[in-house]
Length: 118
Image (tube, rainbow, N blue to C red; front, side):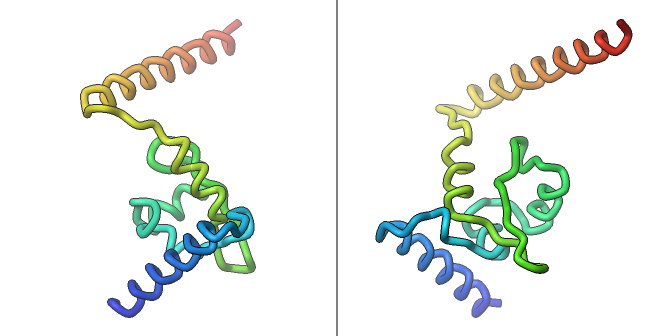
């Protein structure tokens, strides 16, 4: 297990070194086992589910590439996904944002329901 973990962290470090050296991040691909949980704090089972649902950790999932049976993620897509995430100054601010998001989602669903009955 430790040897596998070392391999995953080395693979991630090498990809990030290429990126810092100026290599195009759209051309750097990482295997799913390196991305989850080493770059994105989610379990691999959560990642597999996100490919079906299109949602990861409450927002659109990062794009992926299928190479035969292997699932890979482009570093550019991962960096975009990580950058686009909301950040908060406190847990209270995060909770308020989630509350507003839920209210907006409910209103949207209600409006769709109303349109269906028109």
